[in-house]
Every structure is written in structure tokens, then in C-alpha cells.
Amino acid sequence: MTVPARLPEALTALRDAVAAAPLGLATPGSEAARRAARGVVEQVDDYLLPRLRDLDAPLLTVVGGSTGAGKSTLVNSLVGAPVTTPGVLRPTTRAPVLVCARTDVPAFEGDRVLPGLARVTGGAGSPGTLQLVPRDDVPPGLALLDAPDVDSVVESNRELAAQLLAAADLWVFVTTAARYADAVPWDVLRTAQERGTALAVVLDRVPPGAADEIAPDLAGMLDRAGLAGVRLFVVEERPLVDGFLPEDQVAPLRGWLHALAADQEQRAAVVRQTLTGALASLEDRVAGIAAEVEQQAQAARALREAAAASYTAAYEGIDEGVRSGSLLRGEVLARWQEFVGTGEWMRSLQSSIGRLRDRVSAAITGRPSPAAELQGALETSVETLLRAEADRAAERTVTVWRALPGGPPLLSAADTDLDRVSPDFSEAAAAQVRDWQGYVLDLVREEGAGKRTQARVLSWGVNGAGAAVMVAVFAHTGGLTGGEVAVAGGTTALGQRLLEAVFGDAAVRSLAARAREDLQARVDALLRYEQGRFDALVDTAGPGPDAAAELRTAAAALAAARDRA
Image (cartoon, rainbow, N blue to C red; front, side, top):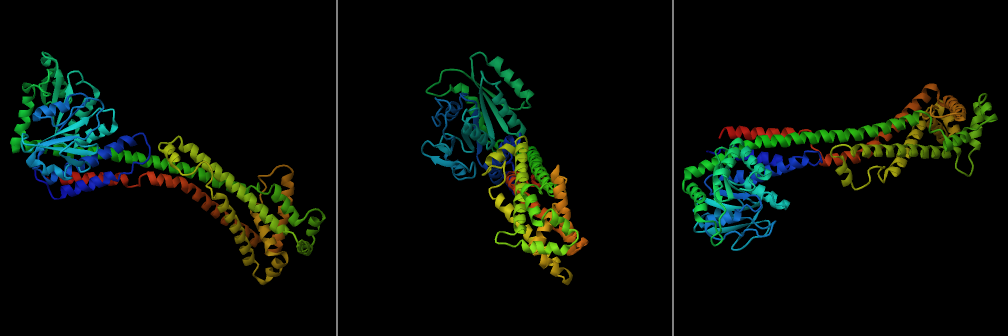
């Protein structure tokens, strides 16, 4: 097998794309996809790239299996020395042990293979390290690695076992006569089959005389699983000799391994089988990861749409509150009546606009003017409406997110409670309403700049005219009931006639429309800011629109480079 120059480059690009795969949302398949992505990255780093760079490196044979299957005893017996310590207490957490010829130590001293594990020589390693044991009685070209239990109750042991198996040129999988049909061994064997890994199976602890019955049964199971070509070795359960398996039981496996080490062509065939199978398996594995990224994108979209729907409803609720006239209640209504006057003064207004100017001028006393009090009441009323709708939007969003994939963990990870407005909302809303009122006053000044209207505006007062324009924005009475309709309707109609007398009919409609549009824009900005708290959480955890496509493109590029090999 020759390695085209672009194959390592394409493999590295795929590895980087998988490592960056956005799988931060807690969707039903996210954990499995994260494990798959981690497995791809580790196999590329631990095995594929190192092996592509050095096809003639020693054959790394990983001895793996279930708890208590006798892996360490088998390795010691193959070497003929106590190079690894069998676990007396389960679970055992220790460093994996790699045994090789002294001449092959340089191939494993650096980070070429299993770069995430620090090397330890001359003594037992600790968790997170790889213990190297050089031996004169191990043939060059062969390395044996004693892996942790694949079914260990310690998760880190299981993960390390899977990582080591994925870094192997050859698996020697050890199971027992009592447990060879268990689910965990077959999960591992199916993984080997799916990845095309070179594999041998050791059936250990077979009762004397039972091999003729058990071995064919296991061979049939391997055949049905698509592993008909797997070498099967049987080790009978006999007393150990000085801690080692009887020589006649271990000799066939040792002889086969030594023959592989001695025959460069056979060794290359094993490497080629595993390397080719591992590279070919990446396409399906990455396709599964990409499919989950798409699920993540759908989940992110649903979360964003839920937040957008809640805040759109809040915007519509505020717009309805503005247009319905429901803001002209209570304090606002009282201040409006005080501002324009009632009773005989209202009736006199119908015959003389001049008397209204006198009335307004006389209202200037030591206390805040009726116009200022009206503006203050409007400010408070609008702020209350904004907060109520924003609170409802936040609560609705949280409620929906709790039922959507990925939503609950995002809510738990938030720094603040999201079921109510943000802490600075009230201050921001007050500032926006005040700025809106300032905008309305600027409109009045602009409209009153002409010679025909300037004197009228000055006699009325910019604040007074501005207050009347603000009330005109809320002039509808659909939100009022009973006597409020009559009172508000009369007073707003009065304000309308007053404004028309000052500015003219067309100008009044324009002023009210522009004031309402500005208020709507400010409301929209406030709500989008509040919605942004939710969107930011999704942006942090969810994938971008092209994430799945980028994975598939990288996988296709690797497949093209592999086809040229």
C-alpha cells in the first residue's frame, strides 16, 4: 500500500472537522454522537496518521477483553515473564502495559502512537500513562499491549480500552467459555467487523474436554457475525505453572504472533487490512455524526423559533395595548382630564380656542405642570405594559423550552433566571420611553417651526402640544369599558380638535403616525434584546447552518484521496 501525499492531508482535515463538530445541545442522540466524534478523533490521532506516516512500524497487538477474562495472564504467558500484573481486585485502574523488543522501543517512546498517554519506563505507570516494557525475548516487529477491561464498571477504564483497541493493528480479543455469548464482547467484535480490523479471538478457561463442543459454537457465532476468517485459539482451564498458562495452551497463539513478526509480507497484510478498514469506516461514522449535527440544527431552530414566537406575541400585545386605548386608564386618564379641563371649560372650548390658550397659560404654577404630570403618567403606564408583556414572553419561552430537545440544559446553564425580564430591563424601558417622549417633543418643535403655527405652539407650549400628541397615539378606546369610554372618548376628541386647531388635520395624523412608529421601533429593540438572551444560549451550543455539510465535504475529500491510494 502506497500513501498518496494528499491522504494524510485529507485525513487531518476530516479530523479537525469532526473535532469541531457542534454537538452542544442535549438532543436524544447527542451523547452517542459525541462519543463517536471522540472515537474518530482519537483513532486518527492514535493510529491512522501515525500508521500512514510509518507503514513499517512494529505491529501493535492490543490484548483486550472482558473483566476477569485472563488478559494479563495471557500476555505474561506469551512473553514468558511477569511483565504485567493481573488485577486481583476489580475494578483495577492502572496504566496499560506495552511490551516490545528493545530495538522497537524508539517506535513507541515518542508521541507517534497514543500521543495522549505519557510514557513510563523502568517501573509501573499511573493512570493516564503508558508503561513501556522492553524485552529481549519479544521478536522485533511485534508489540503486545495489555488493555483495561472493555466492560469495566469504571467509565475511564472502558473509554481507555476502546481507545487502545482503536489504535491497534491487530486485536487479540480474550473471552471465556462462560461469557463468550455476553452482549459486551459481541459489541466489541461487531465494532471490529464494521471497521475491518484484523482480529484473533482467544477462548479462555475452557473446561477440559469441552473444547469440541464450545469452540464450534463460538466459531458459528463468529461466522454468522461476518467474522468467518477470524483466527480462534482455545485455552483450557488448567492450573497455572509459576503464574503462567501451560506451555501447550499458549504456544499456538505465540507461534502465530511470532510468525507475523518474522514475515514482513504477512505483517504488512495485517496492517493493510486494519488501515484500509479503519479509513473506509470513517465515511459511515462521520455520516452518523453529520446526521446528528443536522438534528442539532433542527433542535436549535425549534428553540429559536419558540423564543421568536413568544417575543412576537409580546410585541403584538404591546401594539394592541397602545392602539386599544387601554393605556388611557387610571392615572393617565385623570392627568389628561386635569390637563385639558372638564365641564364648562370643555364646552367653552367649542366656541373659542383662545380661551383654551389662556387656560393652559394659567396652569403654570409652582407644582409640575399638568403636561409634565401627564407625560409622567404616560411614561409609567407604558413602562408597566412593556414589562408585563416582556415578562410573559420570557415565561412562555421558558415553558416551551422545557419541553423541547436541548432546552432544559440550556436553561440550567444560564447565569440568570430567564423566566422574567433581564435585571436591567426596567431601566432600559424607562430610558426608551423617555427618549420616545423627547422624540415626540422634537416632532412638535419641527412641526411648529413655520410662521403659521409657531405662535400657536408657543402659546400652547411644546410640552403641552407634545403631551396631546402622545395621547393621540393611544386615542382609540377599544380597551376601555363603561364610563371610561365616554370620558376618554370625550377628552381625546377634545385633544384631537385642539391639535387640529394648532397644526391642521393632516399634520396631526402625520405626527401621531410618526410617534407611533417610533414607539414601535423602540419596543421592538427592547424585545429583541430580551429575546437575544435565549438566542445567545442557542448560538453557543447549536451548530451553524453549514456544519453538517462541512463534515460531509471533508469525508468525501478523504474518500477521494483514499481511492487514489
